Image (cartoon, rainbow, N blue to C red; front, side):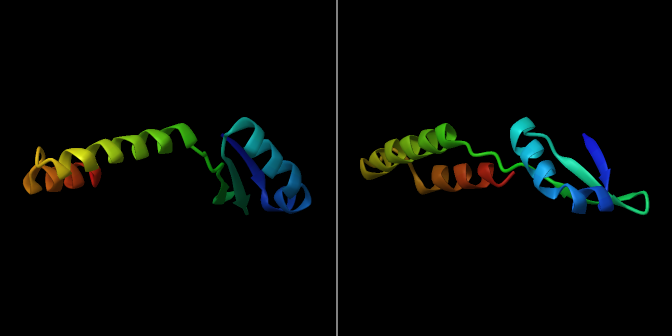
Length: 82
């Protein structure tokens, strides 16, 4: 991970943002030699979202048929919180 000074970040913010987007890597910004802020890329995961939606639809059908109990649903919910 690259680190830049606050002065450099202010001077070249647009270039830093483009670099973060292009490389999908964070850049730390330092003030008086101490890292204080990070520019972090937002990763879109469209394929993952589609998979989750597909799984939710399948789960919904199974719930409607009575194949999944409330206890199993709560266990899946709790597993997702870990």
